[in-house]
Length: 304
Image (cartoon, rainbow, N blue to C red; front, side):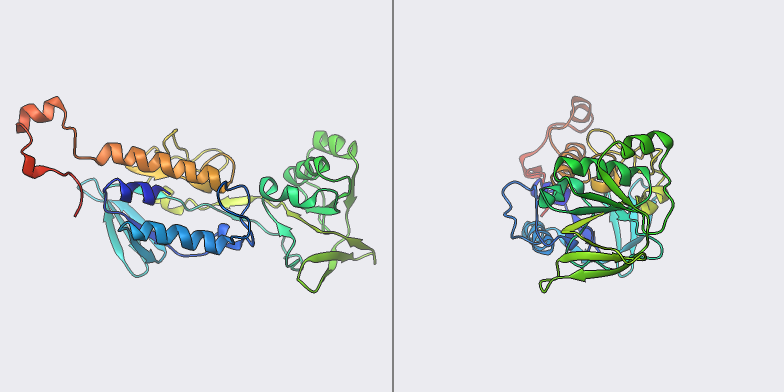
């Protein structure tokens, strides 16, 4: 979205995208108004990229490994197969969901990470939440807003939530299952049907949520000297500007709800703010006094 705005507002824009990401894992797109739910994450991303390229942005299927500020105040980005120099940089590097160690058996269709996206799927159906920390405990309690059949699966781990959370959790009708998961059963369409456990128990589920935290992908932000928040996310203002002049960050790498519509709004604000800083006109009075009036042949102030 940031690239769409900067391109349509007349600035040479390059998108460096390695492919994949959390959105690419979505079988269906939820909560994006105007986008029907039969649109997969991959199709959603493909359409977005085609829109941006259609307005003239360059696209690199690549991965940026290094970023630095040059002596003239610009930014040099080194990717595996390209070097780019830019006046502004927008980081949309997101975060990586953490998984149990060792990994739990794959649950195929039915494994979710986004409560706000997918809780609706489990109205009046049995659901699990897998994890051992406070976030898992709270998500399990939240799911009682949608169903009365919620299991919190520790998968052999000891609980790490605090005493207050423990009292709160045990006062809610959530079954805490301590045993390690030993097997997963799926139907012919690949949807989760049940899990089996080390004690021989079999529990039926429509699906559930893995809650093991996340790791913000801030390597490039740290190379450029951007401030981070206490939780590891990139610190930004209301327009996505970081502590480093000319560097912006949007989406899941920044604080807030990890949602596509939220990230799209952040991208729009960043793109518009970049335009304000880079657009040629109007010249300030100080510039006009120093340089004189603007001849017509200098307009339009837009890239070829």
